[in-house]
Length: 291
Image (cartoon, rainbow, N blue to C red; front, side):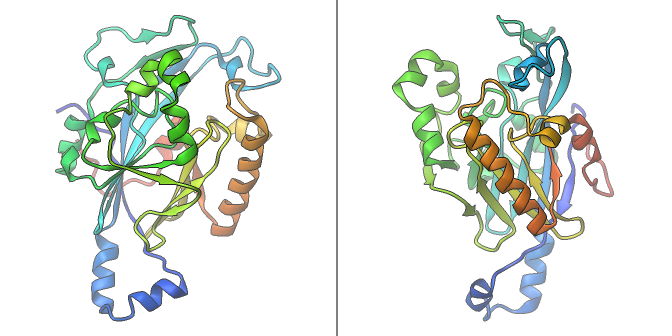
């Protein structure tokens, strides 16, 4: 089996007072058992060579520069079900001998392994998933989404309307086709506590796309963390609040950045930029590295 990039985390269950009342009848040992069963796995969904980094700032700061992005996807295993967060690059890249470069030359992309093959490493198949959620519906985050057609898609209503619109179907058919197999849909209008216990929360952060969202998870051993989606692509864009020229709405992006930072501070959450190779490599690792 190809080498997998899989990281396992223990997550903590945090409940508000109302939730505590709801589970007051539950034996404390059962709660402890549930906590120990929650895990987060991180996989390699491909590599993005950005040939035109100038696209990632309104002010031309990065003109003439290039860099390489990671492209991770994540699995959260919870007693109430499994969640797939993001879906990497398109799987038709798997098996190509040479990376693919977009017609405009902006990106060169590659993906080495399929989601089904990688999930075997943790004993799961697509049929084992209750939910799939994408930070947004750009091509590098929806690659294997259709494989999870038995799962419920947790999507912001604004994102759903955007990706299924007549305009998108006509002018960006590939983006629509990447998610059209998802027919079990739960439309969201803001933040959503996925399992109802505070351990996994989708946060609505529009701007990059109309319904862009990020993910909060509370780790038992390593503390809370936030996965940024494409709110930020790399550290300088976070530091200077630079906005890519292709974002859907600049003002909403900046408002989301402010809301994100306030939430991260409130929760004392470690922030991981999903496209940062450095952040991907530095995420807390399990005692055993699965292969």
